[in-house]
Image (cartoon, one colour):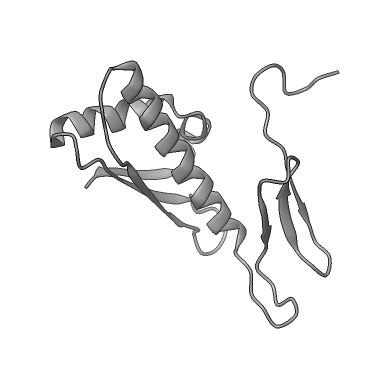
Length: 135
């Protein structure tokens, strides 16, 4: 039985051994996770999450812009993730998008529409504290 259903699939595996790796099934992503391995520190799972979230919002901004016939030029999206101290706190995320080639009003409307369409943000809606800004 297929539990997750139809749609685009992305698979990654985290391994806790001497190497502490996270990797995608297609080999395109491979990162050493936080932990002292051979005297080197890796990235934290929270950094991987922030990078993935920023990338998903960025891609969705580009997709929504194309659908609306907007030329954006370079789009920069920064996600700052704050993990609460202690139990019971909610994850806090600040997303800042910078779309220099659009007016402030057009950029704001585009970012809001993209954030509503982003599958990762949709999955987290109501479960995180979010601040969304346009630079």
